[in-house]
Length: 249
Image (tube, rainbow, N blue to C red; front, side, top):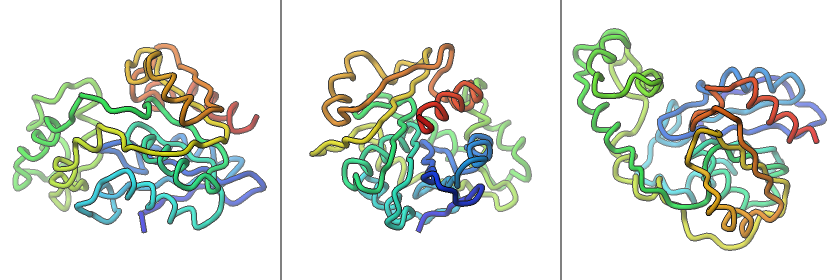
């Protein structure tokens, strides 16, 4: 079972499940989760091979979707997934449509991409953890990682006291082609779906619309102006407003 962080208490509204992206964790979504829990229970998960969740050599989207289905426990939820978590959420909705009330996919499309993230894994592997007693020690060794928020983001998955990464770097590296790809899927999800992208991001493009509509015929597409791929962190208020408007409609 995935590690979960629960916010709020059950209400008459469907609970909200949040699935983070590659190298992320449930804690990354703490601000959004806490604010959304004012009207419903919110469950943020550590995806497999991330955070405090179990490690596995299998990091396929089928496996990740099965993990999410297990967390739902047979009860329909609203589901929000970002990037890698968005792809897992899409596969969940396609494989287990009865478990998904409404689906929100944040800045990702059901297509394969070419931008491998293995170079970031190489940078994390290169950190001499024996010299690390605090995150700043690791930050000094990550000088080749752009200081545009990426370095700080990666360091959130460092257990400095334990001198270890809370990421299964070997499995994530081995499974990278599948992570940046998208599995062959059948069927459709006919429930309400929002594809919410960053206006300054190129992850969701006009040419992806046909594929989106084929798999998710009720999909609505929207963008947050000025936001990049990490739209929930860069424009949290706007992201929250768009999320509430869709889920509460």
